Image 1 (cartoon, rainbow, N blue to C red):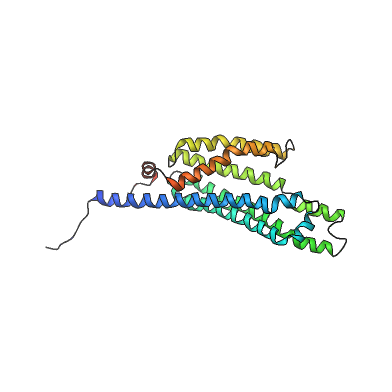
Image 2: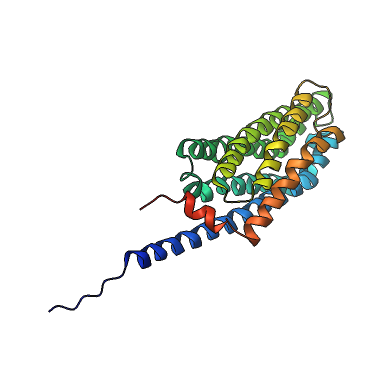
Length: 253
């Protein structure tokens, strides 16, 4: 008789389940770290480049005199955009098990559309220094024309509004998927869903000139969702996805 070792189907199922849990835990940890990297890079980009350039009397002259700082700001914007895009990529295998259509939509919006906007903003920063040199060859960056051109290039109010609305659409898809899957506690996802309308309202008010894009009103309305995202990131790193929910969301073999 030939000797063969057969493993009960329960053991094989437990092995697959264990691998699934480990894969989901790795995805959760990676996504949480990427969330934090993207958020920190975004905050630093504002203080390194966005605020100083926008508050300068002559944005082009400031960019010419601080070209290294402006380039660093552009790099931080790219780090932010790529990190947040990778969150969608990393979580896609998990989220597609809940609803492939919504997961694909989330991947496209966060991974492609939103990232493209970040790239455009970074390019706008990088254009400032060469543009300053070109203007200096003529009447100089301190001329009224130079000041207006610099202000136009760096005036990202419109881009910020569009970016924020695109972000909210992606966030809505993301939190619907999390709510349905239960892979994180529902109080976290409900918090996120409740924060999205406030975020949308903030930037719609800014779009129509009711408040400034960087006003305290906008920051206050955006705060609940901003805090929630960091809570979600820390939860994914510290706790991962809920094991029971992972097994329910996994496809049956």
